[in-house]
Amino acid sequence: MTSLSGKGLVTLTDLPYMIQLQILAYLDLPELLNKVAPLNKYFYHLAHNSRFWQKLDFTNSQCHLSLSYLRQLLGFAPLASTLILSRQACDKAELSDDVADIFGEVLHRCPQLVYLQLAYLRPSKEALAGLCIGHRHMQSSQPVGGYLLHLDLSGSDQLTPELVETLARSFPRLQSLCLAHCRQACDSTTGHLGRLLTQLSYINLDENTTPPEALNLLLTSRTDTFERVVLDASGCESRHLAPALASCSRLRMLCCDFAEDVSDELLDSGISQLGCLESLTLRKAYRISDEAFNRLGQFGHFPSLTHLDLTECRCLTDEGLHHLVSNFGHRLEILVLNWCWKITDNTVDLLFDTCRLMSSLSLVGLHQLTGRQLPLVPERMPDLRFLDLRNCNAIQDPLCHQLVAQRPCLCIVDFFGFIVDGSCDAGGVPEPESAAGFTFTERWTRPLRLLRM
Image 1 (cartoon, rainbow, N blue to C red):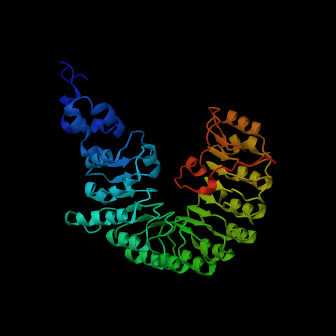
Image 2 (tube, one colour):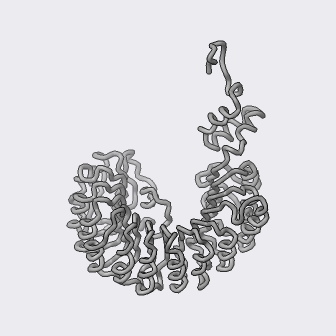
Image 3 (cartoon, rainbow, N blue to C red):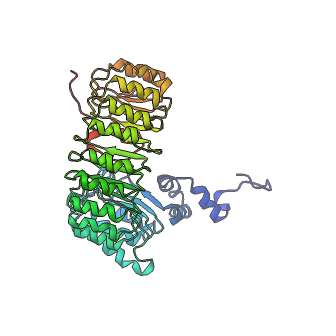
């Protein structure tokens, strides 16, 4: 770098300290640790400046992350606002199950955390209690409840209703709480979470057998704040669940999973009242009739709906889907119709004519599709980037390769679950939600290797 006077070179160390920090801010943490810190002692301290350590995401970590090294890294991050540590990262780094013991130290070492994700680490009850104890140790230096707004404890098998209540009392400012796959976390007291967490806007209770009465109480107690809800609807009756959902008029995202027991009333009296919906997921709704989908398509008003997932809605036919697509298909960007066996080429033709903004389309298991309109995809769906055709046994594989040749940016999953894309790389199988930009981990999206009929 040449100086303004033109009398020689200016090195990084000649610049003001704050400018040095701004330049290094363009590097990520692995680059700082591996390329900057080893240069000399000065750069070592520069790379470990706490301003760079405000987001710690170990999801894709390739380093050998020992427990002691993890503690050391957290020590560099007193200003961290985000910490993401998943089971996947721990397994990749060969961490032992003792990693859960660090729960009690997280908030002590990173007192300004706003987003904390500790998913599928299988912590013990003592470790979970330590999260609250660590919080209480530091309350003298910051507001009651700390700064934590988003907490993800997915897959914590030892999380009990008593511990959930303790967490809610410890962090009353929580806006987002994910308890997916915490199978012991919910009971009749779960309904009181709405009273304890007055700012709660997102709750994820997927694969939690929450008593229907508690679920209804939770929904009705936070009608003024709920914007995103993921719930396990198994055992729920539509006559109670529908009015509870209808009262949450601010909902932008709703996911009803395992909806085997709900009936048409859920659509007619509940979901149809949610005019702010941007994303609707209704899975395994075996008892909802095609007539209910007709009414939702004809009379429902969803001006912002862009994501629709109707996986395993077995009663849905071409007529019901026709009304849905005709009403708001021109705004849809993501559509999932996996295992809706009654859907045929007739309605899929309408999809290609109407849904021009579609970026992700999943048609897994639709055995009646022949793919007669697929050659028109490049013209009719210019934004389509992902197409899942697993187990569509009437669609021939050469057609997938022909489509990719016309549109190299398109990624297709063929009958057997192999990826067909512009690189002609047939390898692993992606999760449809991941390819569409979603982070949900759903077990029913995993590939099923069936024999071609």
